View: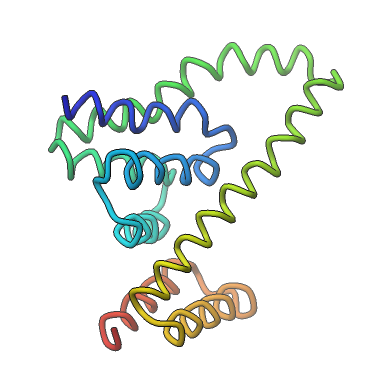
Amino acid sequence: MIYWQIFIAFFIPGILGYGGGPSSIPLIEHEVVDRYQWLSVQEFSEVLALGNALPGPIATKMAGYIGYQQGGVLGSIIALFATVAPSIALMIPLLGFLLKHKDSPKVRRMTQLVRPTIAVLLGVMTFDFFAGSVKSSGFPHTIFIGLMSYLLLAKWKIHPALVITGALIYGALFL
């Protein structure tokens, strides 16, 4: 039964996550945190941070880790397959259709409507992470880490892996 749950937990975001990893992250969070309760919001944010520090697609890294955590090696394989199967099965015919009708006003309107939906989903997830961080770490630590991360990433162009490593070290020392 756990293998079927792992498959469904990653297959559904794979189908609905139009736009790649960033759009599927809130969907994966819903499945593994809310629906199956395999991880807490805090644990999910840690898996997400670790996955962002590693090279490659975020959804497959998260699927591999969570699948392994819940069902061992077979669970990891099932989660990875469930993550990429919808893309393989749907993108080939869909790409042909979209290329054929790329100048259609309906296709343009559809792609324009998807972007704000993804932005709202990412905003809700960010708010949940912020609220969880304030609850577990406190407001001053959350603001400090957020402000420093912003400055390091946006102003000083430090690589995200180094910023995440710095935040982990800060957390280990002060939290």
